[in-house]
Length: 262
Length: 262
Image 1: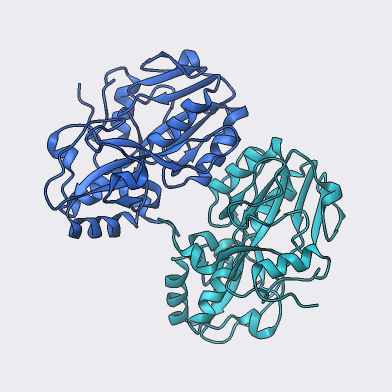
Image 2: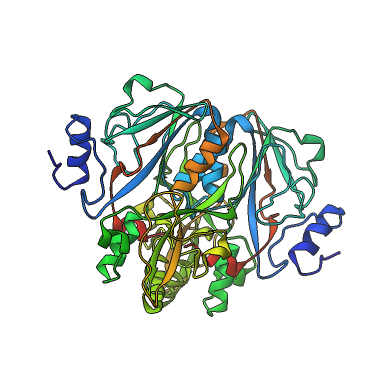
């Protein structure tokens, strides 16, 4: 059953076991977030990694150890049940993809909620800037670059970017719009020559699906929320939980809440 | 001897023991920063406190445990020697005010550099908005409010604000300018009635000096970098080091670097 269209409704449907599929298009106007959960002894390093790399890892909320409630963004939510599906990793190996994480919960777990490109894509669509992967009905193409993130403790890794092709006036307008969303990856990191940031073949993304680039369009690259997961996978911590890609946490924040940064 | 006028020069003068006085007016255009140093086992809680309270605690850099170099903002600096004067606290009690902290240094210390209102004061002066405490040659008045910060782990406490009196058109212009500086406390948190935020007597600041409020002027209140120190003092951690108030760390960042947030 398709959940009704507020953040609360989607979370309630997930909690009741009625929804375990991806969340794009659900609860339009509400902010969707990436989830990373690590044990307390890794939490400082991971928080520092996010603080040093705010474009790929814009923090929306961080919980106290053992607290499953993201009090800053959804005070009645429970991160153990309110996402459609999760991934459980031990020593870097995926061991389970459950629809709730109650049996894996521990008193030392710290949860990180990280902003997502759905927020700025909504703003681009509202300004009549087309989004190719939405037109094509596929996932956004994502690429590992040769740009190294600022390391922090045990966490280090390359910047991962997402790509959307546009004509020059759209690149300019999209940059202006995204400058208002520092907590949803902000302005692009590059446009044009993919090789300049270490991408060998634009038609072979490392994650997601390839999209058409039409004559007169430039590929435009944004910092991507897959970056922290790449750093975590490289560090192979003993235990970590994330959301299933595409199955995001939906916050009570609205897209407009993310524009106020001062 | 007055240090010459770049960030590097001021740090070198401090390191050589030639300068141990306050830093306002030194190295104009370079960003000055508050310093808080805590042991690794408190670092996650303090980083989380800053992340949850970005207006009073805008982070400019956080070091790895044991690393005295703030690599993100001054890669040739040494936080053990490059400030004019420090304060050492044990169990919440001030035990020393040395000009370097080499003998107190430990491999588990994490350093936090936090933005400072000098940055936006420079921008206000550049737009011909007068700053009363600078006109009067005294310290800015600061007040403890009845607004509670978002707690994080062992850290909790009230928001501390600084105050600058202005006429309405200057309040509007100052708000516009400060909206560009989220990492230097950003826009004001209040103006007008001091009692509305729990300030009983505007002529008796809790820190700093009282300043004149002229007819037609409103007191305008900004989140203040004393806030994290108030939270630390309330938590009474076993060991903490801060800068001596007014004796700031001077970064290689310039004021303009702090305007880019997206």
